[in-house]
Amino acid sequence: MSKYKDYFKNVINSMDKDFLWTTDNNETYIEQLIENEIKPTHFLYQKKFIPIASCKNKNDVLGYYEENGKDVIVAIHFMGYVSTDKENPTFDIFENICIACIKIVDVYNNLYKNSRYPIMLNGERIKGEKTTTTLRGFYNILPIIYDSLWKINEFRGEYANANEIQLLKIQDLFQFFIAEFPYKIRDIFILAEIGNYSDACILLRSLIETFIYFKYYIINDDGDNLSRYIRRDKEYKIQIKTIMENVVPGFYDNEYAELCKFTHGNPLIHGLFRGNVDKEHPLRYSIYGINLDWYSYIANLTTPIIMGMFNMFDRVYKKNTVHVYKPLVDEINIVKEFILSDMDERFIKYPKQKETIERYKKIVEF
Image (cartoon, rainbow, N blue to C red; front, side):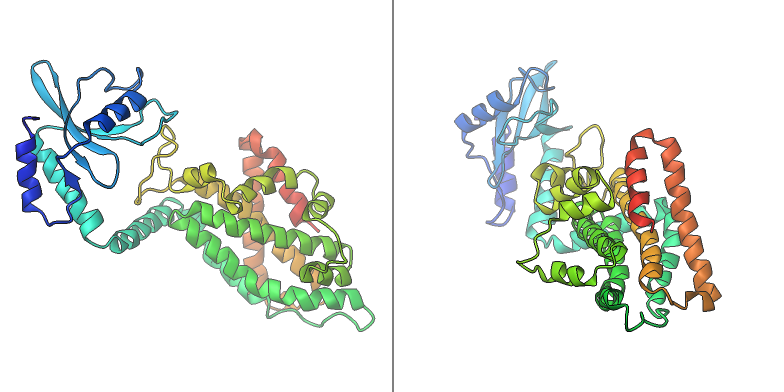
């Protein structure tokens, strides 16, 4: 028997009957985990690991190995499968068995015995604070973005003339899109703010698709087929790829295809975007961590659509009355200048983004 098992049994006896650890270890299974997962590149390779206790609900094993005449207490978080990351499985080394048991009991009490919901809420709060503090400049402009998007809907002005049948039909459908648009933008940034990057991308993909098909029918002055497309008229056969290629060639196979991975449940991209906080370990996750790369990815794809909405509004409501209210005109100009400056700066600074930025300018310009 491991010389530390009696110590751990005393810990078990001090806990409630639902405590998730046991000293009745499946030695054969643990040996299989070691053989399969501890590869020559791993720090623990060829360490003579002796199990003390194991977790009932997952492949966590507490044990020790001897090195330089001293016992090294280690908890190995086996994955149950072979990882491509040479540092997996991850592990924790403790100064002694007492500290290891304190940590195990603390994790049990906080993550299992007690509700995890408050932790979730606290994680969202901390991530939100980190995001807004780090991106203070962007969050200074966001209130202006929301305000101007909500207000323009009150400045539609006169509708199209009676003989402009197609435009009247477009205006009839567009009113719902423009009313919903600021809420969708708000939802995207709220999700990104608290680290829910993949969920934000699902909404973003839907919003971009809607924006592009509206633009397609607006520039073609085709209210009839816009209505048929929205109704999913079985007699009207046109694919979103055809629409996108007409509006901006290459967008469907690049930016849109990437966003579709989120909607269609690509497990790897969901894993990467679920709060990756360490570039060296792409799948490492922290409920309190943010990733500015992922946030920037979302913001860079979202902000041009905001500018595009102002341009689309002008095209749909040709007799709009925005010009009669200077504060709104000023806000729109501030937002447009901010977005254009950002795109121009990234166009120069990041050569790999040039094609994407060029495609976005084609989407949002009328």
